[in-house]
Length: 217
View 1: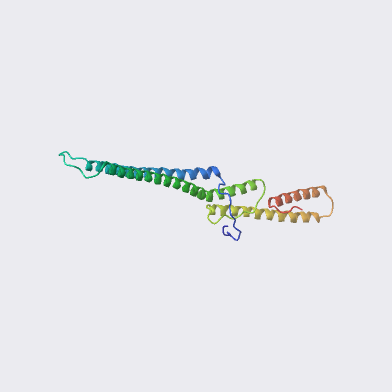
View 2: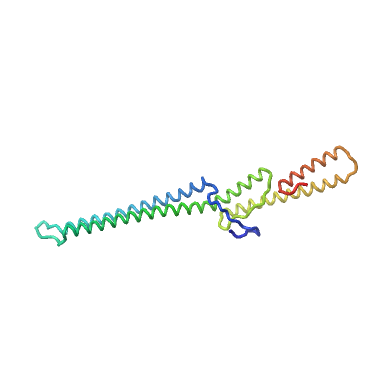
């Protein structure tokens, strides 16, 4: 659970893919870029390995064969050369397998890392969009703090201050309207205009209270 911010209780966002399109797009781009670079580097390493194997095999064959003057070559029988060549080819395949596994693991790890990093951006954006939907619907909800490692903290702080200002103004309106309503109720008489004004003010008070999620009398 994240630490409280500004005296408010922190919370844990359990869903990591809060904006699948955004997060998967950039996570895959990160993984793809790293994969391409790794494949290029791995191909260069594998090429050098197989080249060294080819040179060594050619050298052994030349050493074991008679030279142009008919002098005998090194005492290496064909079976020994074949075993050595087989061992070098096995080593080349092991290198290729290791490179392939490394590239695969790197792509997977970076894809997961990309999801985690974008989650710290997409999470706050998703939360703000939900609060904006509530404000559009006429509700000034209580804003929960971001997690400790979330990004966009300054923007979220500004947004939170805006909501607090709206709440403060709405509370002031409610208090003013309630005072007017009480004053009108104290007036003696049943004039139609006074009753109508009181009804409008009462309805406005109820609307303002509903914005703040306050109980409506």
